[in-house]
Length: 298
Length: 275
Image 1: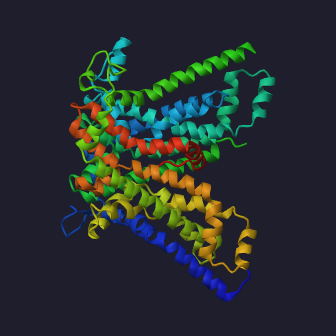
Image 2: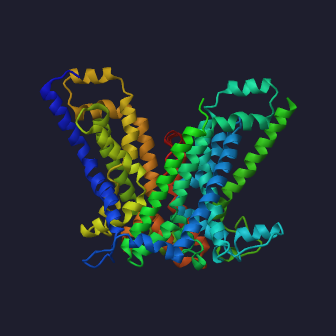
Image 3: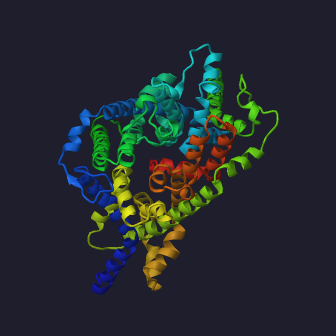
């Protein structure tokens, strides 16, 4: 790049011109809304009235007194701490299996990965049918095994677990693919050397494979936790837009949606949105902190 | 030697058992979709229908305006993917090959699209589109996704890996930047463009939350949203039609996935990003 004055100018001009078609939507639909929902969270507004009443932090102060929000918070945490670890472990088992020289590997991989590709709306249709208390496959299978059956989505004690189970099935294939890529980066010499020292299968797994994959595990747990914390689609679809019997499957995002678009409490809903984002940031910060301390890099 | 063989047999047994469990909902969906109505509520459940009622698909397709939903989904998904490829390629070229003041700050702003969860932009975007009079239009379903931080980043990485000599040759030829982008960069970045196009097509075909919020009339629904409304109105009466509708909602992405499994899997593994 010779410092030719006029060509430099022209390059800069072309640069801005090339950015313009994406910069406009970026400002309008990402940066401005980020600031605007912060402002909205400090107001009381019903979406229709011309006046936005400034109420300071009172939307945030109202949260601890909202019993449904407290329940939504508990449900979201319960959902996250069950779906994420189980799905990562199942994904790891699948990845270990597929890392072996098996025939038809692409077929197996395709089957495990398929649920992550298909729209949640379509998956939910079949899981609603599987969870049908009278004719569903789930209760039939439980009866065959002489186990107690359940009303699944129709009972407040089981509805959330029904969704947790379905989402473990839905997300495990994603974890498998990432872990499989990680496994292929573990040098084979390490395993060979350990094997020569007489290490068994379990020792190889715990002493070499798992530590070598620790950055991948950390990444997966954080990304999945952020994703799980924002769960909405299966909640809406599986509970017919109601949040489950007695709010038993109402999550934070579902509560936010209902406050904004059904009760028109735009200020309060924006405050909930900010809390969700704040928690997502905490997860990310935790990842960065932990990555420095825990994770073994080669 | 024998222990290795036993291990291999155990691995096959486990993989087949797990694959059966993972595939079971899909198999159940397929067989329910082609069952005669009176074989749905049988006990024990029937795995193979006595007659294959393929007509259930046609019945489901017309029971709700699925032709319209399908058309809407195709318009929205193709527009989003096309616009994103265009805007991301231009922006990626600017970030990879051009010098201008404020470049680093702007690049961070693009990456922020990946970092900012859509929940926080949801309500203001709804209000913006309402003020623009765009609610319940294709504009509302397409415009908010015109810029992509992920696509810009992915394509920029590929542009950066193109050797400088190729650009010098183009410059000697007196090519302008648009020409260089079209004739040098884009052909070389084809794998990245394909991976991105596949992933964004899948995400936007499957999207449920945003169409739920910005559309209000039946004729603007997309496939997944139409399916859910259909599910909620039909549930308990005709599982066969529901499963049939679920299958044709999923079919386009399943076909895309089967045709390009390698791109999907490599794309996901490389970038590690979910929709």
